[in-house]
Amino acid sequence: MNSNQQISFYIPRMSGKYDKKQVKAIFKHLNIGKVKRVDFTPINKKPGFIEIYDTQNKSAFVHMELLYPNDLTERIFQIVFLQTSGYKIYPENNNIYWLLLKNTYPIQDTLMNKHQIVENCRYLESVVQQQADTIKNLEEKVLGIQSVVYQLVGGLFCPNTQVGSYQVNSNVLFRTEPLLQIKNIPLNTSKWETSPTTRQGDSNENRINSLEFQMKSATKLLSVLSDLMGEKLEAEEDNYSVDLQSISDTEAEYLLEQDHYQNQYYNQDNETTYSSRTHSSMPSLIENYDEADSNSDSSLERRRISSELCGNE
Image (cartoon, rainbow, N blue to C red):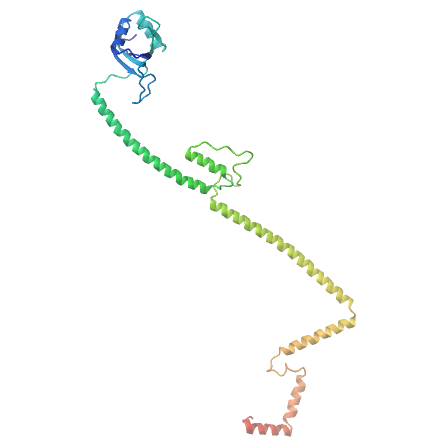
């Protein structure tokens, strides 16, 4: 046992009737050693200023100034400090005992008086208040960020086909437990799986799918109509060929002649009035008639009268 080693015992429970002087006297009476300081605390005291005071029982930290050199102290030191076990002592020579344990974190002595300690506590209270204000401000900022990110997450994933991805990101954002998966229904049914699609993208995708379906339907319908029209035209051509073959040669010649007259009549209606050749089917006869008429007496007389009346040559 090292005499320079700091010895401190922890007594988990003792009667509330004992005070510091009595504890010091009992340790001296049992020939254990000289007590330097005794600190009383409530049983199972937690760190901080909050305490539950029990007048019936309390705990004690006994700080030793020295241990007396004898067989008892050697045995106590061996069991408590080397074996980290407990040793029982009987303060009143009856069945009531104190259990001596090793004080793992002994409180060091201080030169500060109670006024200095109170002043330090006031300073710590001001620091704690500043930190509380900072924490409150940060909490409000975090709530705002969570609200914005929650809106973004809701817009990134389709609420109908990407419920799983939406819920996972929401759980990470708010640190909540994942909801139970609906039985026999997969949470993600989108073909894009966990990739964000955005609500606008989902809407556009649905519109594109609808347009593609309509175009495919229209293409299929046009193909069917084209086939039907082709079959109808082929049938009409076959019927026309059969009709031509069934008529006689005389009837065919008559039809061709009628068609020739119709074309000739159509061409005469479209001819201009400034060409005498295009208004007659016999231009040579018209020229000969004009030459004969210009040399006759009646023609000369008509020209003279026209010249006197109109000044024509």
